[in-house]
Length: 204
Ligand SMILES: CC(C)(COP(=O)(O)OP(=O)(O)OC[C@H]1O[C@@H](n2cnc3c(N)ncnc32)[C@H](O)[C@@H]1OP(=O)(O)O)[C@@H](O)C(=O)NCCC(=O)NCCS
Image 1: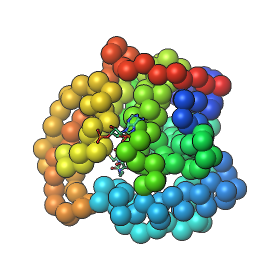
Image 2: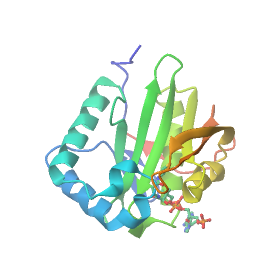
Image 3: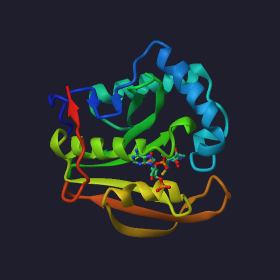
């Protein structure tokens, strides 16, 4: 059952970033589109929506659906995304998203993309580390999963760096956006925080 009354303290703050629920009213949409268009060469091989720069209007629609999901505690369609804001520059640095929530276990999956000017700095590992803590400690999750296309080496390194366990290689499980061919998916998971690298994180 959905925990409608559960309090989700926000934002989540780490040493270098703020993770916050998207805001309606176009400012986030413009920032999102700017970040996505700057990053298209790096994100388009892996994310099906990123073959073209999204329009501001469709992005606003996506962000509003996201806000609705946060309100009703579901992850249908667009998941429950958080904007990653770089504290030093106040810039929109990417998205980290919880999706496929199953409140019966409860369990959740984490996905992500970074603006190209913020890659190779450990930003997404920091964000995933913080959100994993939030999932277990605030949301009461019993399982946090990360799925990666097998050829997506940069993405695979994130759960590996954070001590997630490789649960499965799902053969012929997805279409590769990059090649158009059927390929394998790697499934990583954590069922607790044991061995997760220490990080200074707070919320609320
Ligand atoms: C997947 C993606 C978010 C990974 O980004 P990333 O920058 O490689 O990952 P991190 O932010 O965790 O950075 C890690 C790297 O920063 C380096 N780094 C530099 N400064 C650092 C610091 N201060 N702290 C930690 N790491 C640092 C690390 O050594 C590491 O480099 P390495 O992989 O060569 O060892 C990014 O490639 C992306 O957006 N890809 C397209 C979308 C996508 O594939 N999404 C996932 C779909 S499943």
